Image 1 (tube, rainbow, N blue to C red):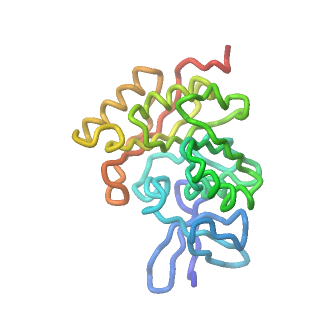
Image 2: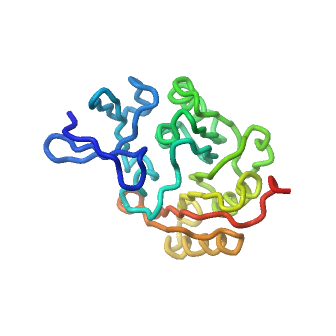
Length: 238
């Protein structure tokens, strides 16, 4: 049982739960009480239900624990989520944005999307499943409304370019992005630090202002998360 629930310093929509015995767990307020999305623990406290957020299952939880300078996702945010898979992290994003926000969830794997439909979409009204390849945003641009930011977690060789292509389609100037860089998906033989720097260079030269860059060890080896703000050209402004 929980001894204490307190708001995390990065966001009023993220919580730290102190358990009996002194252990602390990261959590979000469950938008669908009684429903566990991926087997995560549900904890009740003072009439509210929280979902434990595992940093070894979610890079976004890991970046919170690693101390990102600013957490851009908030209640009411409209977000394009690239690489939503079966919905582990996307469901916590759904909790964070709440009923006044929305999450457009893109993934190209039919099996993952089936799991997303049954585990997440069936129980939540603030998510939209989009079966598509994130490398081709023109194919789903008609399905995505106005957004505040892009969360990108895809296993592709050109991850920064993929983010840029989507930002050009969907983001207005100043919109934020969170990019999970997977070094092994880009080049398994090279030093991850060199790969991270190359991806950051691509972002900078194409109109992204870097807000923070964090390695995700020990939660995810050879991974980094980059917070940036888009200052390039947007087709939605033309």
